[in-house]
Length: 239
Ligand code: C5P
Image (spheres, protein in one colour):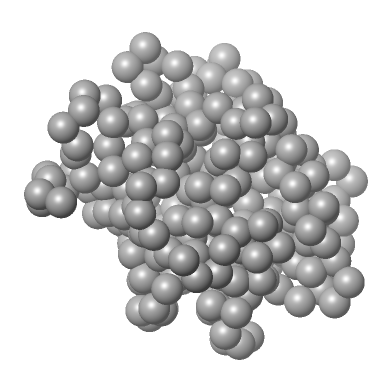
């Protein structure tokens, strides 16, 4: 393939222009990072696993009536997506206490929350992606009040559907992060990725962690954990 313009490079993905207006190509990298880039590693095959898992999940969401930027997977590590302007918010949904929630609020990891909650974090590496309130979102002009309501409703709907997919394969959806973007019409669309990099996924029977905490906390082999998720979702390990 002829080399196309690199539009953006993040910690885990590159975004390239295509010759089609409004469509970009995402390439998943093998890089693993944690703690805002403080911990880093190259893990062969990780890009392919996240591309496969994200593609499968976006397809399943679309079948359930939840649209996203995803168009199609075009190679082991690449997919075509609709070009959107990313809203600089990390939208986190939590069903069980874990991670920064447990640390900040002193609630034991694994405790079920009385209801699912949505949190917003400012997407800003230099500031360390701080947790922000709806008022911060408003005064920083990150989204209008109506858009905040739309983002929360969309995140909770996705949580319901996604939680269902994972429950079917014996996996508990502890929490996850979403990103949304705006298309040319200004409509809000689910974007970025949904993978074990962006979700906490625990085996329902053994409580084994099948997500990036394996890397963050040195709990074992990340590839094994991600392969477990891919195969349980019905994906193929090797092509
Ligand atoms: O670290 P914390 O507990 O706030 O993370 C909540 C969820 O959001 C986890 O599933 C984590 O993997 C995800 N997350 C992410 N990218 C970030 C921060 C958190 O995917 N920059």
